[in-house]
Amino acid sequence: MTGVDIHALAGAYALDALDDVERAAFRRHLAQCEACAIEVTELCETAARLADATAAAPPPQLRGRVLAEITRTRQVGPASADTGRARAGTGWRRWAAGAVAAAVLAIAASGVTYVIQEDRVRQAGQVQAVLAAPDAVVQRAPAKGGGEVAVWTSQSRAARVVMLDGLLAPDAEHAYQLWFIRDNTPTDAGTLGAGMGNGVRLLEGVSGGSLAVTLEPAGGSVAPHEPLLATVPLG
Amino acid sequence: MSRDGDAGAERGTGGPPLRAVPTTAAADAPDADALLRAVARGDERAFAGLYDLLAPRVYGLVRRVLRDPAQAEEVAQEVLVEVWRTAARFDPARGSAASWVFTIAHRRAVDRVRAEQAGADRVRRVAASSAETPYDDVVDQATTRLEQQQVRRCLKALTELQREAITLAYYGGYTYREVAELVGAALPTVKTRMRDGLIRMRDCLGVSVG
Image (cartoon, chains in turn brown, blue):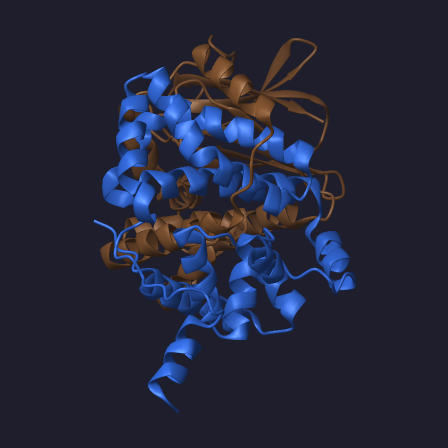
């Protein structure tokens, strides 16, 4: 997508009318475009004003429930938010760049650019196909320390897409690793790049259990280290 | 046309003349911002004040998108607890506290709607029910509150396609691709109408940030 094309999405972005892939791409664009960021901030503010016209009396019991729940809900600090925001815009690009980098290391020869790009496009296409599948269902879980993990599952595509969104970015020596957990047995499901708090992974197969995220030394571990930062049940 | 005639056309609905107030989120902005800053420091009483100020619009917005009051209640609760949990992340340089809260609410509602219903089914369902016109709902529910009247007036000032694109996306929770299918317009047209429609709304409402 070119800069001009993507900039035309500013309105749709402000209205939450993009799918997850386009949204990630747009946020990457925003991180690089100061002028766009101002426009988008104003359009988001404008879109939020549309809420003014929807005011309705909430059910009376809601107030008591919310006020009770906050007394047992821990608040997050501003630091993780800054990291999350700074990282959020770059997640998709970093994921794509990471996929390419891995391929480059594996092949390390001239004349392979075409193959690598094909692979990246193929994987991005598969991600999009899962997200767009009519039977796609999403499960989300908040991550300890901020951000969330979402897993889209499409039985018809026999694949899942995992998105880590706005997790606290680890230092350059550590990385988030994904695990399938079945019958209390973890299986490696891939590792994000070191220092990355955002990422997307395509997982083939739809066996049950749950998906967990841990923080591991860069490159990943053979077994997960406690604590589990997020656990998403897989339907 | 007489001067009176012009004035009548401007206000459109026969109500008192309205002027755009050159602030964000109108009169409640300073309160919501101050309350949210206190909430970020763990002030539960400030949170109760913020609840009273914003919960009607959080609940109303979520219900508008989801249509199901029971689900709306559940999602509104999630949103309001999330506001408590992440209050320290609010950055006043990026907009008002009220819009930050409504942005979270809208995002959650849209996520819920998209997770639960396959896009194609949703489009078919709505396409089949021609009675569903979100804009009319807006008009029905408009009250005497200044902000609501402003939004209503500014929506009326849009072209029909701008208004449809914006209300279907925001109140209906549709992606712009679904909106294009619903209104029978080309994708680039819908994208453009969403953007220039919002720019027109921004100018009409007098929204400025920073």
